[in-house]
Each structure stands twice: as structure tokens, then as C-alpha cells.
Length: 568
Ligand code: PEP
Ligand code: MG
Image 1 (cartoon, rainbow, N blue to C red):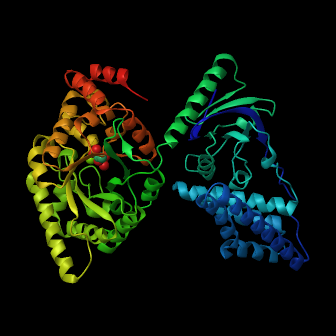
Image 2 (cartoon, rainbow, N blue to C red):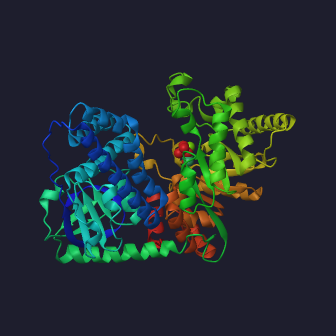
Image 3 (cartoon, helix red, strand yellow):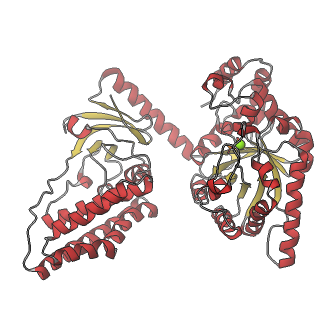
């Protein structure tokens, strides 16, 4: 068995076809007829642009516009004068087209491949794809025709370039194994878009196999089996069936309302970290954004983001969500989350220190800038404000006062905003759970942050391995807090959501249904799974399980009971 990076989920079983690298060696000649060489090179570029544009159109039709952009990026790259101009200048000094192309591409490759940023390293692999394609044209080397491979083929190659991917006929290729590439490489993106199981970064795989071999590609676990037989093969045939069945089952939930088995309407929202992620939330059929972590605006920056910079980011997320709710959490930094230009003091207990709403209320100018940006953006969709790390009623009152003042100012300035914009409370401290009844009278909504609620309730630093066994949202203490928070919210008639990781835990879902949670905010890729699990439980079944579990006094018994009752 070979291990690699699990880049595209699913199980593929089939016969291997290797795509061996072609010999692209050439003799670097000194050219005398420079004009003719420049013409030859221009012709190769023109052919490359034409072929690539056609391929991009095909990809656009067969896969999607975003994937086509990858190839169009190659066209733009060679059209960039800093690249092709440099190549022509080298030809003018008497170098042949092949040598000029190679020298310039290798120079750019060297620059990009040494950068830390994954996106920049990706540019390096784009450059070598462009170089190879144009060299093949100059040398008259023809590629293996991937479009003609037989059904049931597992492609094995060093790297799957976008130009290769554009020729894949979905249905014929059942798996992909490469020697290089990571989860965010273009080959991974394209494999996922084509829904072909892929395992990348398997060192030496091209030389280790031959075209007579068969293979299992487990793109979920990142495993490859060559010439599988007996039990292994039959196990994976079953696994493949199960995967396909589950995928089909989940597809039924696209565009559907989130309903329990007896028809209670709930909502599955998404957690996002940047405005661009809102696109992902839409693609994954999220019914809203339950947590937009605004920290990225401050962390990926060299200065405090201005009101306009923040406004644009919130507006983008709101417009992308097309009227669906977007809950923007105000700045949750300080303590351990350092921002160099903000000059935080070192603290002995950063998790219990000067952070989140505490820091924001002590810096009203900075906080007002953020709140004003959110209130202004509320004119472009359904925005809600969420306050992190609340431990007292006064904190939420103070934020509401600031918001009221901002509304007065905006009214006076004639700037549009949503008069009904809500201010809610993130329920993630032991204190907030203990005074949930009081907070529910002041807040417009609750969202339970189980990641921190677990830590603060259990008094556990989750980074400390010695006490990590205590860190579980299924601990009786945490479950009771969750139940109390939901009950208190319901009593005051406010909406209660959950944006901690536990909201997507299949074992937690029946308990949350029983407690009465309204909105489940999860990683976008888990929207359909969560909607599917919710659909399997009736309120009565969830209540019976919750009654049993809430009477238990330890996490081990609780987990065992939930696992025994799980519906997956
Ligand atoms: C939480 O604490 O549960 C939460 C969602 O917030 P974060 O993980 O950003 O602290
Ligand atoms: Mg938190």
C-alpha cells in the first residue's frame, strides 16, 4: 500500500495507464536567421494560445468557469511582456527559441517555487506546464491522448497538468495518482471538480507500476493499492458502493429545506473566514452564514483596516449570500491571537485576559469603526452583529449602545442601513451559560460557540495533551450548559444557533434537535451531511435519546449510547 495526499474523495478501481514524461531535450543552437527564429517562436505561441483557449472553452463547458480560468491564466502568462518579451530579447542575441523559452521559464519557476505561499508555488507549476506545452509544439512532440483511454482507467503520472485534465472524459478515468501536488494544487481542484478520486504526492509511483497493473485509489483516505486481490479488493468494492450511495443520497438534499423526519423546519448555515468563502457557502447550499470570523481582515494586514475596507468586505459577503442571513462576529483577538501592529501586552493567562469584547470595548474608536462598517453594509443584505466572549449583561448592553449611536449618526448623515439589524451574543463562556436567562432578555439572538464553551466550562486548555481527555462537548457539564442556553433563549423567544464544531457532529445532532436548536452553522462542506442527518430524526426519537443521555453521569457512557443510536 502507498500513502499520499487525499486530494479528491471517493474510491476508484481500475487498470493503470501511465503517462510517461516525454523526452523534451533539445540542442541549444546559435541561430543566424534571427527574424525566422522569432517567427517560428511566435507561431508556437500562437498555436499554444489557440489550443489552450479551445481547451479552456471545453473545460468551461464540461467542468466549470472557475476551472477554465486556470488555463486562461496560462494564456495570460505567456502574453505577459515580462515573460514573452524577455524570450524574444534572448532570441535577438542569437539563442534558439527552445533555449530562450527554457531559460526564462526556469528563472520564473525558481522565483515562485521558493516562496512560502502555496498560491505562489502553484504559479511555479503553471509556469512549467506552459513551458512544457510550448516546447512540445516547438519540438513537434505529441502527447498521449488522454481523451481516448478506455473506461475504468486509473491515470498515473508525475503531475496532472491542467492541459492534461482538460482531455479527461469523465466516466473513463476512475482514479488519479500523481507524484507531486497538494490539496490546493490545480490537479487537485480539477480532480474534485470532475469528482474523480485522486491521491497525490505518492513518491516514485510512476516507476513503481506498469500499464499491466490494476489499482485501488482511495481518495478519501489517501491510499493506493496496486494489484489488489481477495479481501482487500472485495472490501473496497463494497466501500465504493457505499460511497456512491451516500453521495447520491446527499445530492437529494441540494436546494431542499432542512427538515426533521417529522417536518420541523431548522436551518443549516455556514462558518466562513473571508468574504470569498461566502461563495463556497452558496455553492454548498448553506442557508446563511452563522459565523463570519472577521479576524482575517485584521490578521492578514499591516494596518488596522479602515471603515471602508471593512465595509467592502462585509458588503461582498452579504451580496454573495443574496439576502440570506450573514452573522458577522466582531473582532475576536487579543491574548494568544497576536496582531503585530496592535501592540498587545504579553499576559500570563491569555485565554482569561484582555481579549475579544473586552479589548474592543476598551478601544471604542477601533470598535466603532468596525461596527459602523457592519451597520453600513447591512443595507446590502441581512446582516447581524455577534459579540464574542460575553461574560456580563453590561457587555452586550454597551455594544447595543454603541450600535444605537452609530445608527443615529448614519441617519443624520443620510446613509442607508437596516434599522432592524440584530445584536446577538456568542455563548462560549461558563459565565454566559450561567446567566443565559439574563442575556436572553438583552440579546436579539444566541449562537453557541462550543469550541470555547467546552474549554471554559471544563477549565481545560485544549493544547495541553495531559488534560485533553477532558475536552469534549459531550461532557455532562457542557451538555447541560448547551441545554440551558437553548432553553433560556427559547423562553425569551429569540433564535438560538450553534457555530462551534459540535453543530456538525452527527452524534450531537439528535441532542440539539431535542433541546430545540434552530440553526446549525457548519463548515460549508458539511452542509448536506448535516441536513441529511437532521432529516433522519423525529423530535420524539431525539427526545427519548436525550432523556436517556442527560441522565448519565460520564462522557464514556454518553458516547456509547449516542453511537449505538446513531443514524448515518
Ligand atoms: C467557538 O468558540 O466555538 C467558535 C466558533 O469560535 P472560535 O472557534 O473562532 O473561537
Ligand atoms: Mg470562540
